[in-house]
Image (cartoon, rainbow, N blue to C red; front, side, top):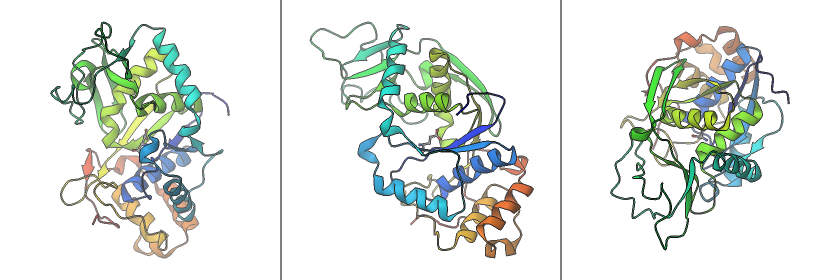
Length: 307
Ligand code: GLU
């Protein structure tokens, strides 16, 4: 794999915590089309770093669903669960910057902390200057200091974040010994030479943390485009937690056309009866990114409304 930055290299990075549902199909299709329309590569990465929440069965189901829907990816599937050494090396590199510190706080001790916009507790800084006496390290965090991160999202526009008030010193290595998503995604995107990240707007709040880590590690920052997130009638993101139904792969045309409509494209009615190859040919020829609805969430016409 080359690391040349002149090419377009995108990816789809599902967490195999359940089957492919409409919301993740939106991210798959949007990232796939952006890559193919620009003659770029599209990689598939299974984000199974959070092993207790993931299963091989769900990963297998996702791969089979993508195949049934006519997706084709470049290279082998990358598995985060097999990349622990790369994350450990990145953590060592970050330790050498002096920004990373061990934290002995329990979840209960942090329960009264301020809450970040994404619902996570903002770390109050208890162990930042050193572990209090008698405390054993549980997790490793990175000190964000007064870092401000700004980036221009191709869909959501300019985003400016003050990391101290919006995220706080965040975890890189969890108390259960697993590496955190924020570190894993940055290491993986950098190693794969990802130039463009197209994913759901539910991850918009994570992007500034990821850009901060890229800066600390001295790796390039990709371009970002955050697609509107599919929500149900109650405004909840479609996910396993909200019981989103698995994409019905016995009717791939209907599923793909539903996603194209959700992304603001205007597939002809008859396209749903065409083969997946014909649908992707139409989609690549007619894809217009400016038609993708702006804004972080929309209900649209859902093929698989949540139960
Ligand atoms: N694994 C994440 C998810 O399924 C996506 C991460 C990403 O695209 O950066 O929500």
